Length: 255
Image (cartoon, rainbow, N blue to C red; front, side, top):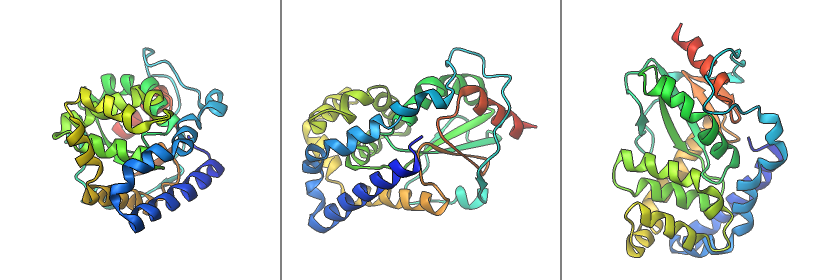
């Protein structure tokens, strides 16, 4: 999880970048991607100093035996699930009894860590089994994360958006820390069928940029100030939760 001090610095940088984009025209996003390598690198590398503190378990291990951590807060589930600026894309059975809402940034190393080390076991044991569903909401810290989320939304359908997020997390080091983020993202986007023209058109979609910004601002209203932040049936948990802890939280909500 990105710490408070790291988050504050990144938020200030991201806020300045966002103001510049709004004030000077959204067509400058591609230029921002080329110019803001320090932002993306900091965000992607934020986990390195505290990896030992996250207690990640291997995804192949059975998520059992851990105690559920106490939530740091709770929000009204009806308000949390109310329609936002972008439609939620549900991973799993929409009628599953446990709802996990994850606020993530695509350049957040701890978010990638969760999706690599915890998510596979949670998906196999709970999402695919119809016991839980996952909704990933956009909370970008910087222009690179914003661009990645935009590309995921531009893929055309829910399954492709989910697959694109998986690929972007898996290949995070290749684009989030790259000197030329635009080229790195284009190479990944081509795997999802983008051409250079459709890639540029997506990143110049001012309406989509605004919708993602509004999603992030709505997350802040629920108290999100770091990534990843999870809401499990309205209870808030922060940090890259190990698979066994997330499993214990889900089991607690299944009782």
